[in-house]
Every structure is written in structure tokens, then in C-alpha cells.
Image 1 (cartoon, rainbow, N blue to C red):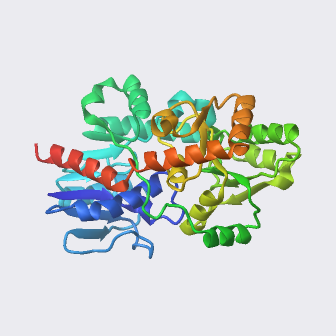
Image 2 (cartoon, rainbow, N blue to C red):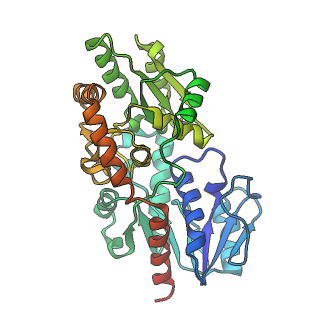
Length: 372
């Protein structure tokens, strides 16, 4: 069987969310192909960091880079030389092509939280989703929470929508003291600190996190912990950067931007006292699993997918309640016993989430459909 795969997201320098998913999934699929063949479609030559190379059962097809590539160049290729099934790790799939198609729906937050998106982003996402629902035969989503939300709007795809959890890379594990010290030195950070990891955009609730941190510093004037924020700029990020700049504790808040070096990112996660992800919603919440796999305690939202991913292995809070975030954050920071308990539980829970499991489940879903 030949599985077509849109690999463009794994070829991007700044891989966040769907890009990281695409990268790790491709890498994990290779040893699981057995007698099947993977045909990867790209719109430019593979970058040096692209996760896999051509071999006997892997073909990389670089197609002409043209505007609206997904709806112009790619479908022509799928018509002239169709695979047995085509899979996209995002919502971007061609409307036509002589093969069954599958795509990934991470979440539909642009329906549930429309005010958290720009008008253009909201309209574009809704259009993509509705077209994908009409033109794909199979759908993958990444949590039960997302699956339930999708089915409220599109109950007709119930039997074709499959939940597959994401994984955590083998490279994501606790860094050595030397690596942690190097990373802190490079970014001029002092331990201890609280870490946020993710995109800089409204749904990540960073403004309330900063307010909770300010409340923490007001109540505990001797608190040594700084707040470190890591992530690329998304949309509507200006008020967040302004909040950092205008905070009375701005000297203790460090925005590092996007970290291209994965080793440095892991070192900073490993070195943090706690990772905080108090998003208003998450399709999955990969940073919490990465933190748990590094033995770093987690404080996260009690809504959307996060409770099913974290369970009792982290502290869950109402993301709209600044006081609750602040109080629970202090409980973790002030208790070595709680930190150790969360670290042990988190390490055990993170073992359930591997990219091998993710790849195996998706391959099984694609194979079952293509061969039925």
C-alpha cells in the first residue's frame, strides 16, 4: 500500500503545534511501515533538519512551489499518480484527487472562542474546516475533548472521526545539570523560575498568568522565582507583550521568543520549578507532557483536553481565576514534597504518550480504510 503524506509542515524552520506533530509523526512512522510505502509531498527541497531521507519504501516528491499549492499542484499529482490513501497532518487537503483523503482536526476553538482570533483567522479556519468535512473521508483528532466538540457541530462524521493522542519525543527527558546551567547562562536566567512554553496569543491566557505572578510577588515579597516566557508570536500578541513591559515586576519577567534549539528548550524545561499552561483551551497541550517527561511539576487549566491528559499528575486550576492560579502556584513553589510527588507521578504518566503509539494508531486507521 502507498500512503501519501503532506510533509511541508515538517520542513518549516519554526515548528510549533501542527509542525512539531508532522515532524515527529513522520519520524515515528518509518520503522512501522512494514511492506507499505510512504510517499511524501513537499513544495521545496527538504531542509537539513527534515526528519527522514529517501530509501526503498520512502519517496520524497518535491512538487512545483506555486500559489495555492494544496488546491493546484498537489491535486494534479494525486490524479496522475494516486496513492492508496492521502493523509494531511493539518486541515489543508485538496478538494479533489483520485484517492481517499484523511486530515487532522486539532480543535475547533474558532467556533467556541471566536473573540480570541482575528476576523481573518476565524473566517479562514472555518472555511478550511467546512471544506475538509465535505472532501475528506477520514478525520483524526487529538483528544476526547476535541472529538466531542467537533461532533456537536458535525455529528455526521462520528464513525469517521478517530481520536489519537500525541506523543513526546525520546529526546525530551531531564537534561543534565551542565546542560541546564549552560542554557540559563546563555539566556541570563537565574534559578529558580516559573516557565511558560507555547505560542504568544490570547487563548494561552498569558495576561492572567502574569497577573497571578504579580499577585504572588505582592503577597510574598521574598519570592525568589522569576517568570520565563518562551514561544513564537501568534496573533493578537501585542497586549501580551505590553503587559510584560508594563508590569511592575517586569525586571523579573523574561520573554525569550522562539527557541530553535530543542536541546536548550528541554534544558530550560528541566531547570524550571514548575511549568504553567493555563490556556483557555488546548487541543492536547503537548508542553505539559514534555514537562512531565522531564520530571518538572505542572500547573495547568482544568478545562478542555488538559484534565484527560494530566489527570492527577499535575495541579489543575480555573484559568479565569487569577487568585486560584496564584494560590496553587505558591503551593507548588513552597512545597518540595508536592514538587517531588508531582514529578514522580508526571514521569509515570508521560510514558503512556509516545510518538510510536501515535504513528501506529494513525497507520492502522489509514490501512483499515484503504484496504476495506
